[in-house]
Length: 103
Image 1 (cartoon, helix red, strand yellow):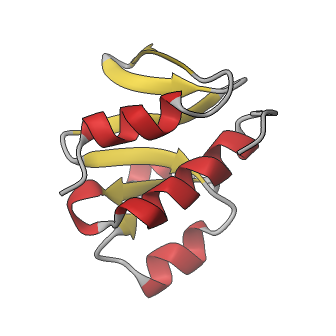
Image 2 (tube, rainbow, N blue to C red):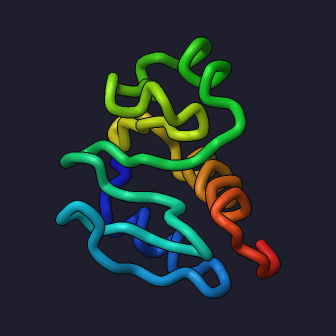
């Protein structure tokens, strides 16, 4: 099962990513926020495919009313996503957050 330590390991392996707290939760930044623990077992990331992801995999991807105005943000249930899919998603989020290193 994917957990916060897996997210941390993937994020910090990307060039220039730093970790700090955001809204009292662990968060990872490229130039801007790329990922944050939303609540236990749920991660917020940036994507260009929020509608498609949530439409095809609503058991993994969703958003809350809080995220309604942010079309690039999606919530991810860590217990339901595979490590390869999470890695790809975090790489996309890294690039959208201004990451410039080689992924």
